[in-house]
Length: 308
Image 1: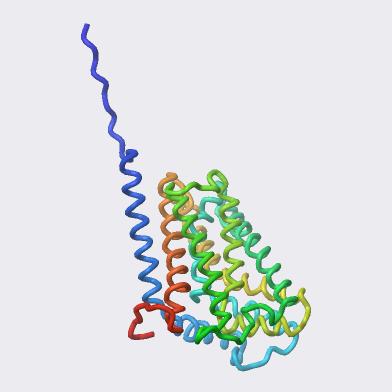
Image 2: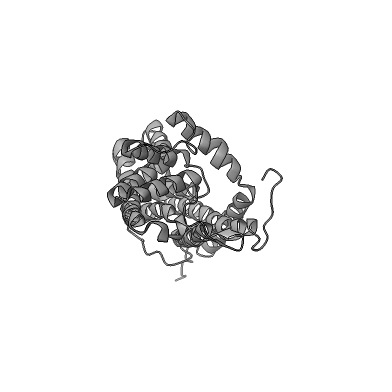
């Protein structure tokens, strides 16, 4: 009696292929983040886009016109947040699109939109409200409102470098964890991942040096009312995510939920999209705020494009 040889079924994703594929994704994502930090034009996004959007929506010069009253301050908070959507201190929020799709429930397209957006907003609002409240109480004792310098570098920019460096590392860690390279503390808990990303987006305010936000912060501190600070910072954060949320909703609605179905069809596809976005934007955040920005003030060197 002859033994029948075992039939070997070919697979499309072997154990040895997974690390190689993850390695390529990580490499390309890191290179994309560095390239974005080199190519980024803060003059264009801060002034050409940000200032013009704010001036148009408010109907006056957003930087030069004083904030007159509580209602005007809260309106300014939302509009300046919207105007700052694509600034270097906010663009990393785009990394939330992949994880939000993981937290979308099966069923109607509307549920697929509302639930992850609600989770993201909850994490974001919790941090921005607390910081607005505490920020008004501390006022000028915060480095973010200081006019001091260390050498040529403003103290408020040092706070930006520290805060965004930490947030960038956190985003990079989440990206590596999504690809299985590092332990994933949110494995099987996509909702917790989205809430955490929302908290990181809310944390952008802790380091934001954007001139319009700086003006808002000074106004809130001058009122002496921490509730105004909390409300203004919540509106600033909500303004920050309006466009990305609208794009996510539009994509889901136009495809009648098929985008979410496609993205979550295989765990590998979801992990690849989420991991690549998180790593690329995490690396961009670290390189831009901890290498490029200090080099502007004479600390280290970073390549400068001709248009900057």
